[in-house]
Length: 270
Image (cartoon, rainbow, N blue to C red; front, side, top):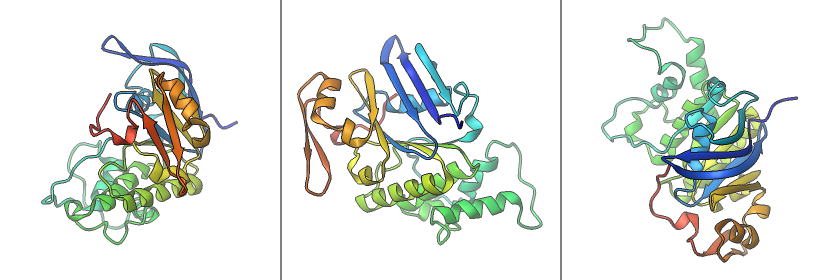
C-alpha cells in the first residue's frame, strides 16, 4: 500500500516552554488537496516544520511518506511564506525555477552546450503552471500572481510527492487567489501530489479542496470543509460561541470571538 503523505497520531509540539498544539491526529493521502486553517499563532506553519523535521514532537508520532520527519525531504516541495522581489531584480523566472534543482550547489555553473535534463524539467514545470509566456522575463517585473506561479514551479521541479505551500495566496487579489487554487488542484490530480496549503481565508479555495485541517484552542480537527467549518465544531475548538453562516454563493462567514482567521491583519506565526 502507498503510505500516507503525512500522518500524525496524538502529536504535540512545545516551543519556548509553551504548548503550541497537542493531541493532533490527521492523515493526508497521496493526491489530496488539504488546506491548513486557523488564527494567528495557532500553529499552522508549525505543522509544515514538523513535516520537514525542523520542529520535534513533544508527544505522539509523525510520519512523512512512510518515513520519520526529515528523512523524506528530498520528496517534498516546500514554498515558505511569501518572499518579495525588488523591481530591479534581473534574475529571470526560469532561473528562479532552476534554483529548485541546483540552488544548493556551490560555484559558478558551467556553460551548457545544449539542453540538458534539468533544463527540460524546468521547461516542463514552467508549462505545467502556465508561466511559459513570461518565464524568461526578470522576476522583479512580474505581477504577484505570476511570481507565485514560478515559485510553485520551483517547488515542483524535483517531482515531489508532497507539496507544502505556506500562505501562497497572501497579498494576491481574489482573481489570482482563485487561479492559484485551481492550478494547485490540477497539480494534485495530474501529478498525484499531496498538497498542504496554509491559508487565512478558505473561501477563495473552498471549491477546490478535498479536506481541511483547522487549528484552534491548542489542537486541530481534520475533515471535509462541510464537517469542520461549522458552528458546532468551531465553538468546541475555540471554547467560545462561534457561528458559521453559509452564504448563497457557497462562502462561509465565521462570526464570533475570537475573530474569523481571515480577518486578522498580522500574517506571521510560528
